[in-house]
Length: 191
Image (cartoon, rainbow, N blue to C red):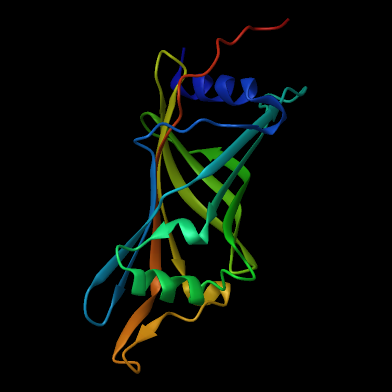
């Protein structure tokens, strides 16, 4: 069975937007840079939901939603955590959310998809498109990796600064992910 078909079958089995169980080795993090040194913040919590419905079309209509509480982003420093929460307006907008809108297969070896979705940061939603490399295991678990380059200013976020502006974060950043699902239930084909 092709890897793409396996991914689609697993997504089809996840009907009605059920939570996806992510394995412990899953990670999602943000990387950026300042005028002094690069920085990175890791998401301690990622809530993932997926759903599908079988339709008359060749592909099932899929959904995927990810939610990361802003307070669960850990930059390795209480000071920087606070600066990031302030910049992301965490009191008014407590989570970063992503909702998949569409996928398209990219030619080549393995399963490579171009994903387009709606990303909401600090209350502002923008459409983002990025490449996802995916693979499935014989137990039905899925492994997906990718990177999403962004500008903070596209979401109305002013890059954080400190020490009276002597330390400034640059506008570009990259959201990276390596997501591993736990094994899925057996899939039974229906006529």
